[in-house]
Length: 191
Image (cartoon, rainbow, N blue to C red):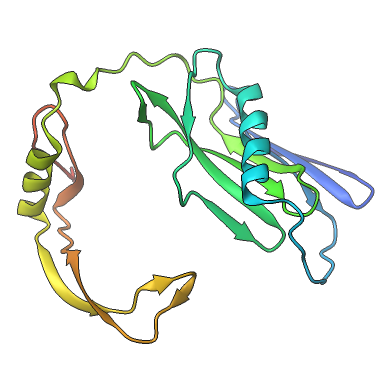
């Protein structure tokens, strides 16, 4: 990766590109100095997300028909919102091809955008011959059985005072966390 930076007044800009291909993977602006002050949100999460989607659509391939934003795929950090989006194929998100867009919470202007833009069209298999979710869950639980634990959940960004009784999946270092949708078998980690 190669990073280019420039400065104008109190702001600096940057672009990060892949050296071999020249593909832009991140672009943004930053304030030169951080001023400590109380931040007020003037832009709602919904308006910020609309701005993020509009900006992102400008840079996606024309064959990208839909992007999805998971319900909890945004966070408020200091004075801005950051949203994570995934392109879809057959209405299924491609979860390892993410795009992130950051919107300033007071001005509503884009601050940063990152992702691998310019992907070629993917010819991925259709899900019509995939095993059922129930069959996949059964296979997953063979390798990651559930166990009872007491834990303090995070509620509204705060750790609860009292623990609750909950089930969690046991970790299995030899087995992956994914099930092949066509074979119904766990995807093993290769050494």
